[in-house]
Length: 124
Image (cartoon, rainbow, N blue to C red; front, top):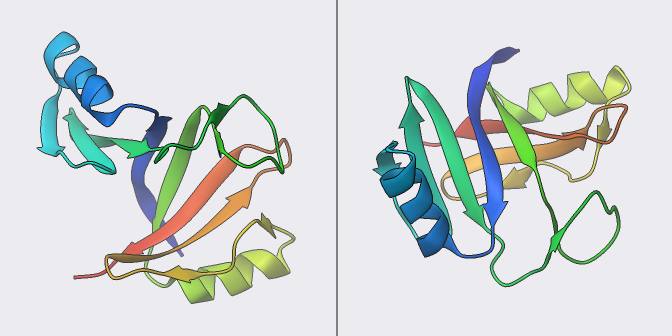
């Protein structure tokens, strides 16, 4: 069901500043640079940056309007709908239904300590 780690990402409040830090200061190789999503190659692993799009970064606050600071692991799956159904039966607490986007299907869930994880199937 789970094929591997698709990416790990951080929410960032200023994409230009963050991308410059990872590219110019840390010396990471950009895979793609955009206003809302950027990725970098870290020795064959993908590190992502996701824009907060003006929403405040929150530190470990659930239920507030904003985005949670810290990393999120995105797991690659072949079928998000099937994985969602199987994991729900196993007691996984999803915080979103399956979200179908033009570029991917995804669903967000939490572990027993409230750490955020994502399921993702990229679309061709």
